[in-house]
Amino acid sequence: MSKVEAFLTPSEEQAVVEAIRLAETATSGEIRVHIEKTTSLPAFDRALEVFHALKMDETQLKNGVLIYVAVKDQAFAICGDKGINDLVPADFWESTKEIMAAHFKNGNFKQGLIDGITKAGEQLQTYFPCAEDDTNELSNEISKG
Image 1 (cartoon, helix red, strand yellow):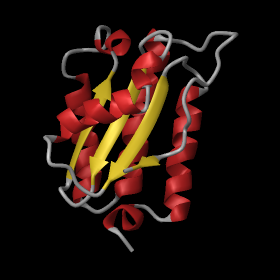
Image 2 (cartoon, one colour):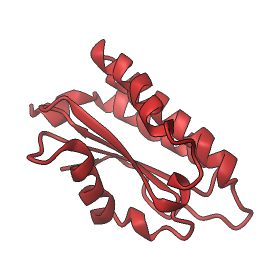
Image 3 (cartoon, helix red, strand yellow):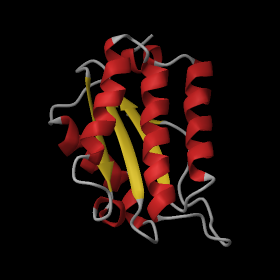
């Protein structure tokens, strides 16, 4: 079993996907989680690459959020698109990472991801409430590299 597959059990993975679905019910924003074994880049730089590869920069309102995890490196980053980055407080992503890191340090990866998703979803809901004609622009499934 690779480090990526061991990071979350199938049931934990489904709980994370459900957290994304729930967070997105009240916003037009899009949240994704990407997990891979390792990266040769700093986590945020790799997160930006993945953000573009997943076409998260193509959402209509530029309100996508990616939570990126490099399991073997024990590194993660949160990457928001211009629409949301221009509106959230300057320390928002860092404070979200701190909440997640506290869970990750205790090996509770599922809860760390869920808390990060929930916090991002709350901000997205504040600035990008769900429109009547909203469509889910991106998959809620966890992508893996």
